[in-house]
Image (tube, rainbow, N blue to C red; front, side):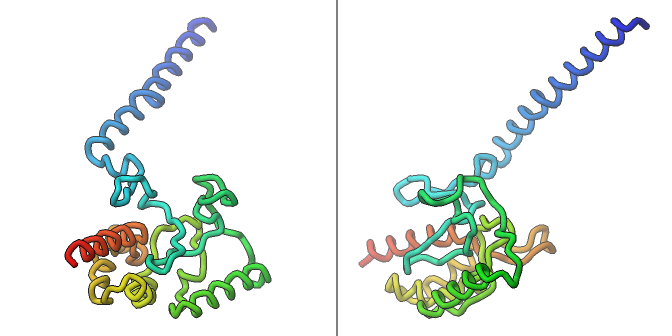
Length: 200
């Protein structure tokens, strides 16, 4: 076969593969995802009680008031505020365990938790590998339960079922540990507080 024939064949194969992999396959996956998993496919976006977008259930964010459960610390400040890293930027600090800056940050976090009467747990002190983890352990949620209940003038027994409700089990039943989605939990807290106010 001539060089021109081989070249033409190669170009045709490239175009066919490009159409299959760059157009047909992505469109098919997008269509299946939108039909079968629309919430997840669109970013697992969460809205507040007024319908305003407040974040994604897949990405952690900072909660600084006493009325909310705190999430894990973040080296990227969860991409919030003027001084924060751009959205989507993730990663750990890569500081060695003996690094003075890391030790200082950890001690400051432990002191802050102790000052607000929250027992320091590992995930309330250390950042996650991505620094965007939206979950805390059940133990970390329970450690904050009394603080949040007092701030909202609710009984701890009223809030405890919400922790159970928003605890996600191990992936495929065997990988990882159960975790509480902080954004979903805090949104549910707002709903609970509003419902109690409306019944008073």
